[in-house]
Length: 134
Image (cartoon, rainbow, N blue to C red; front, side, top):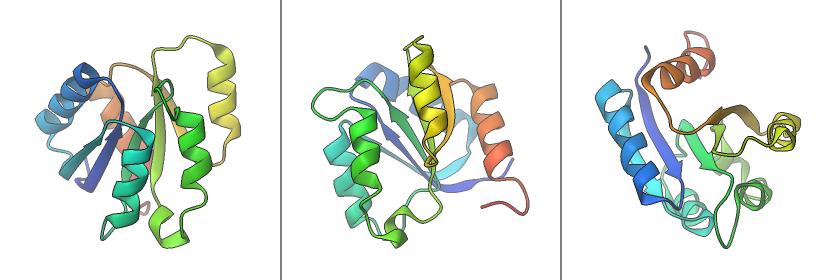
């Protein structure tokens, strides 16, 4: 499995961030793992980072700015800040409308239910960062 430069977790729930970071650390799939606990915090990180993350895991249901609102703002960032970021929506929602909305957004590469697991991370990295991709 290819090792990524960086992954950004965007989720307001500390327990999910802890678990997801633990899965990612155990897989040793990224040089850096950053956590943003809100949409605005993630946007600030993206605006200030020297290079955008390779992979962004985005929660849909967050207070203040939900995942959909984050995507609206993300699309206004300069192209070099969006670069080739692979956006994966993560949710506990079973609402088929959320999956359809995610699939309809060209920006969203995948849609997964929480929690992240080793096999789901391996699948995402394999699909989006295999040789010739990224």
